[in-house]
Length: 141
Image (cartoon, rainbow, N blue to C red; front, side, top):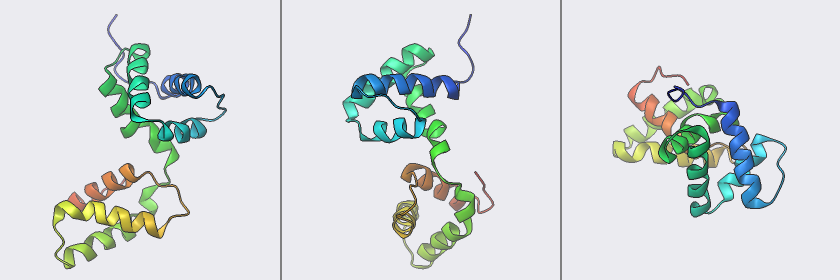
């Protein structure tokens, strides 16, 4: 039997919860708390999680890591479409200031997350969203 075409979000969450629980010797009741604790792990501990999860999910460690960053953690980030116009205005503002395009996404992300410190945005997701609206202002998540 071949490997499944996609990683199950439910299985991923269960397996990650188990891995983080073992590493931290702690019980977690929500995936939100698992994710928060996972973010605090040292790089070597995260790498070990990718390896262990890759065996359980029949994937490479890189595929597991990519799934985590590109799909699974999105559930913990507020809907950026709500802030799209504001992010686009920040992009345009930096363009007017003749900031190099390669720096704009990072600067917009910094300014935006600083402005909304009380909201837990995932910086990688905000940065990705900004880069996509720079390419296509009509883009939505």
